[in-house]
Length: 260
Image 1 (cartoon, rainbow, N blue to C red):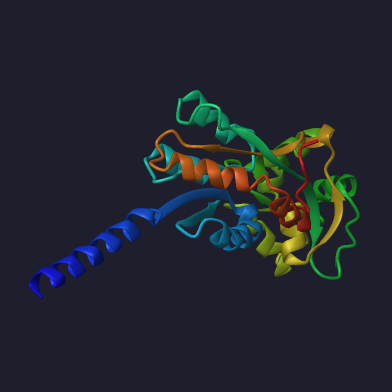
Image 2 (cartoon, rainbow, N blue to C red; image 1 turned 180 degrees about the vertical axis):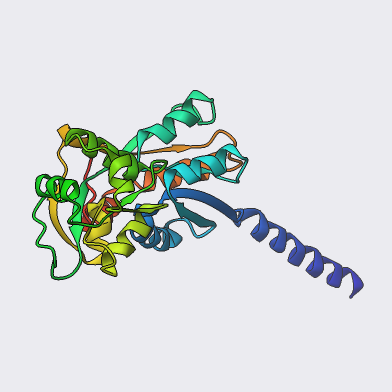
């Protein structure tokens, strides 16, 4: 009887060990993404649970400049998705990216959005430039250290607007990321705001104009795996998933587009 019990226990232990060996290791994947990707990434992360049930994607959303600083200061990040090339270039130049993983993932648009009803009757960037000069409008923009603010500075330069003079005149308000700018427009505390087209869609705001390439360049979102990642295979797998048709439909649903 003792011998039989020993055999049963041994068999049970063998089955348990086999089950444990075949069960994939649970991985926490830290993804830093530009604030303008919040809604789409949340949806994609939820869908990814069925694709890779052993991977828990933990997102951090903020301005790309803030995320860059956090990465440079040693934050745990496996995959970085930026709203501009500048921040990704900084990481590449410092040797922080995993070789051959950087891609241009998406394109966005910089737009001029207005609150419900468009009380000031704003029609476009050209008119906005004149209203700013006359002090007849309050515009929300991003800080200079965030991509949407940097694109805005290019638009100001295109129309030969002096941002410092405008700020002194009290016709500008600022946000530390694009979501803060979007909120100011949504709550109608400003007459208009310069935000991404995707944020306007997500917030249900009216877009009255879109900046051209001549005004601020292309709005490209690069992505790359970090060289410091302890889960490079899983990070690359998730980056590959972001390039699938299923994810493309989610991105395009709010106004992102494939790279042209």
